[in-house]
Image (cartoon, rainbow, N blue to C red):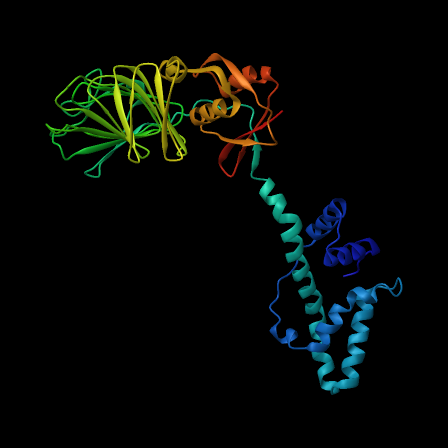
Length: 390
């Protein structure tokens, strides 16, 4: 194959590793014109003279403008003729085309690694204009191995007397007992209300896992939550209600509170009504209404707050009141199932306002852009990502 001087120079630069982006594109286009043929030439690799001469291609092409592929062939045959018997000349002539093919194969591998491979990765990047709310179904897993998909349109779930919807339609016929445990997993973009066997009500936010018995034991009411949930506990002074979440234990007899454990590094419990005792890592505190407990780095702390800032989600709203941008976007990411990526150091920004969570993501972002924040929405390898800059 005859090569132009431009292509020869590109090959030299490729092997030396100093191709510019423009040159990479030019060499990539040339390679695409004729795909390299992969040939297994174990016999060739044993011929040290040929391999050495193959490496001399680059230096030979600098001597003059004559086609260096032809000159290499001439030089190689002369070398072989001087050192070996004539019977081997035909064998070497037969192998010369394969030597060139081997060179192409090695070169193609280098180009794939440094030029084509990054381009293939970029092909998985899709720019999105909007994200509608996910339409995934809430799932219940029972300890007997059964998996049940819930109808999101039917709303609340009632546990007493078996699994059923609030309208009375039966989901799963079960014999109430203390051994059967249910684990509910809510997908992004949805909330679910559950009435437990004792009459307590639990509202689960998106991407939350909630584990509970279909029938409480006489001497214990214990559940587990990972994500975010709002509790309205039925009063029973004899049998306290306990919630396990992210290394802490909450104990109540009758009250309303919100638990948020989305972040494993920092979880919060906000009390709306009644009182609760909260313990973690040997520490214990008692909360009164309008107080919030935080577990961070293994330590418990408490402060006074406005509960409305933390429970607006149960009315399907984003509520921001001097909310820092990172916290606000974490909340939005949970709801729309997004990975949040910060393109650079974002300046300290606080948000104010109330947004319905039924809106499309583009509508929500348009509101946030008023704070001089820029967004790029993409999908990469099946993951939706929101890139943030200002």
